[in-house]
Image 1: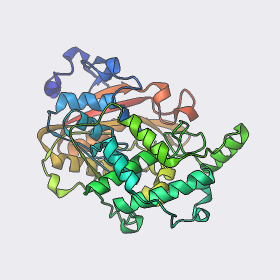
Image 2 (image 1 turned 45 degrees about the vertical axis):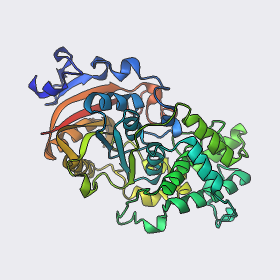
Image 3 (image 1 turned 180 degrees about the vertical axis):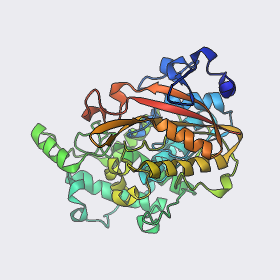
Image 4 (image 1 turned 135 degrees about the vertical axis):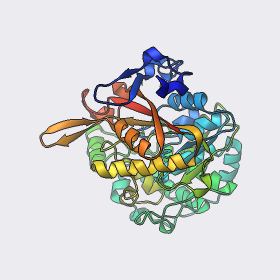
Length: 423
C-alpha cells in the first residue's frame, strides 16, 4: 500500500482497511505502534501544566505527544492553528521543539501563551507581588447579572481589580480588536506582557469549577454554564458562592502547575485566525497537529462566555470569527482556507495531523451522520495535500463532548485523525 509508505514507522500493512463508501485508507488508533491508547490514555498523563484549564473539544496530551514524537525532531517548529488550551504547543516545548499556537478565541490565546512562555513560579511571583492592586475602575454594579450568578461579592471585587491590572500590562484591549470585521491579531512580545498573560491564564483556569482553587460556586470546569440553569441548580441543591482570596488561589494553582518544572524551550502564542497565518511563516513549519471545530457539534464562544467576559470580550462578538456553522458549504470552505494556509506554511515533505469527529445533523425528520474526516480529506486534497491515512479513534463515553449532560447514545462517539502530507 504505497499511499501510506511513509507511515511504516507507526503501522503495519495488515492493520489497514477500507470502507466501502470511502476512497481513503483507514486504521485504528489501537493498532498503532506504541499508541497513546495503550500506554498514555489515562486522564493524568503528562505534565501538570496541561491541567491549567479544561476546555470542551480538547484532545489528550498523549495524542499530541505521539505525533510530535514520531513526526518531528528536536528544534523543529510545531504548529497548532486551532490551539485551544495549548496542548500541542506546550507538549512540543516539553519535547524540545518550538511550539506555535494560534487561535481566534481570546481565552485560547491566553491559555496557550501562559503555557509556552517558560515562566517559572518564582519569576511569576515577583511580578505579581510588584503590582499595586487598587480600586478597580469597574464597579461591581456594572458587572452583568449573569456573571454575578457565579461569584460572591468579595471574590468578584478581587477578580475585577486583578484582571484590570493584568489586561493593562498585556495590552489585550477589546476596543483595539475588531471581531466584527475579522481584524484580530495580538502577541505578547515583552516579558512583562508574557508574565501578565501567564497570570491571566491561571485566572482563566480557576474562574469556574469545583476544585479548592475555583472562584465560582461549584459548576463545570470545562465550559461556562448557562446562568439561569446554574442559578436554579444552585438554589435547588444549596450550593454557595465561596469567598476566596483570589491572589492566593492563583499562587497555589501556579505552584501545582509547575510542580514538575517548566519546559526548556519557549514557544509562541498568537491571537489570530487559522485561515490567515502570518506571511513570515512560509515553509517554516515542520509539523501541524490540530483539531478544528467539529461541524455543527460545538459552540466554543458560548462554551467560554464567562472566560471571555473575564478578558473583556462579549462571546457574541467572538463567535462571529469562529467556525460555528450548520452549513456544509460554509464549513467546507473554512476548512479549505485553513488547510490551504497550513499547506503554505509547512515545509515540503512535512505532515499535518487533523483530529475531527463524526457528527449528526438533522435532515427533515431523520438524523444523518456526517463523517467530518471526509471533509478534511477532500478539502486537504484541494489545498495540495496527499491523504495518506485516516486513523479511527474511539472516544470513551465519559470523555465525550458535554458527556455529563447527554445520554449514553448521544454525543460524539469517534474521532478520526486525517494524516496529510505536503508533496
